[in-house]
Length: 246
Image (tube, rainbow, N blue to C red; front, side, top):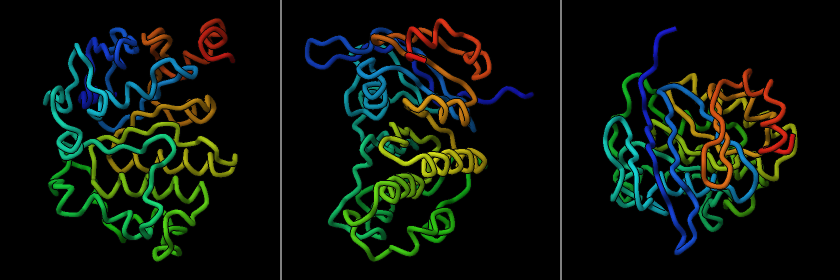
């Protein structure tokens, strides 16, 4: 199997909330066309890592590079323009905007995202997102706040795709969803990967993460304590019990 290109490289980042030392030297990478899962218990630093990459809570030390370009010191909108989309925990769709309006936000003049994406990545537009999410097509004129939790999650993912990113940061996409919808979210992630996008997935649903991930990291108290392939992790009973409660 050919070696994939490194897309996102994180080296020795240290992130604080005030005086609280949250990320204590995290290093990881995501390759092009790969789903990398970050697992860990609540409060271990998973969301802080997502926020550090997106520029919402910048690290005080270390490096973050997308396709070799440093993201350190850039404002969040610039990081988004370089090719990173975020599906935040809790979805964070705009309840007073219609489904269509929510989806078109990344294409507005305010977003400033360039048309060009990583070579080989498919171009997403409203029509293609509607094909991927037929349920949203039926609700284009509805306000975001009237959608069910599963529909709002689809909207958050569809909105991220409309920016045609190189990589999508997904923070707990299965949170609060029924099992049938969790399986659907897994299918969506695999389809996104097949179309040339990478995903950094933060997830507490172990079964979902293991079913979609190409590579797995475990974080505990702000440090990476395990990294490897999903089948290898499945054999590490002590690690699963100690760090994930499985």
